[in-house]
Length: 188
Length: 196
Image (cartoon, rainbow over all chains, first blue to last red; front, side):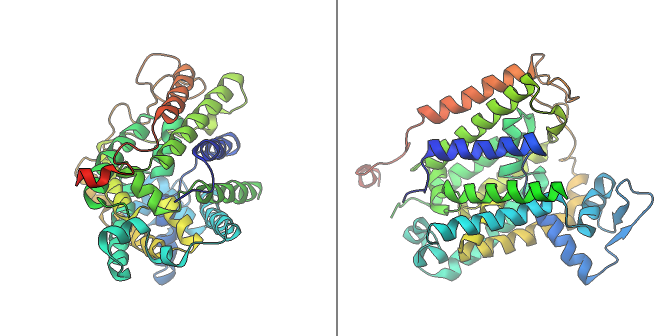
């Protein structure tokens, strides 16, 4: 198992990207856009969810309290998805796809599950998919409760010496390390 | 329009880099968390340290506009949410950003993770008022606080010292930890049998 870049080259490059984001625009964040995407789908199915409002600071409000909070800033982004943060995440997907393609893609066996999962839980894809779905649910629920994820809180937060970033990282590793130690005892 | 162009360039570079450092490979994330391969831990620590040094160096020299900083609120839910994220992070080997990037790289389990993530975010939207009612979202430690006072911002500081200086020191500390961490903390080529 080898990464394309060493930790030194990779760390410098990743740090440069996080710095460039602050220098040119604002700190990197991802998890809010899961909410925006949900909002776009929800509003497409039932258009009364997000509406224009002269009373809201952003000019938009929502019947959903979370989309309506902070002057309706999320509601506004649901109505206008062609904004920096949403396009940023679309570009993230494109950039990762390009890099993976250039290095020849992911091996067939790895596509359904990583080797470390297979070593510990066997080869049935459905088990991995059920776990991945539930994990995704918990990760995004937690990220929204925290107000950010690994990108926004842990990396962008700690690089700005934000107290919240350190609190978040403490919680994530306090849970993540014991969980991984218990679940993944075999290496291969 | 220029902000959309920046989103494409910086977002694209971020996704490309996540794949290049191995963060789209859940083996690296899981083995970072079970302490058997710290490649990604060292990468992340060096990245945070580098970004902190450049940012605070840039603030000191006037290159970086303090208005570009964006510090998030501190509240108990940040810790609780961090714990939830940590649980799923360990099970799946994906976080929101790397999950999207891994799905883009062609991993099917990452695509399922993203679907679960969309459901989880929707779940939070529906339960937000209940979470708020628990008081978990009430500010602590001054809310949007930083470790030291950063000139040109109004963020409250935890310590009455120069935030720029603390930022530079924090950056150096992160880089030093990355430098001195071993490649693995637990197990080894032969120790697995012995440990079992």
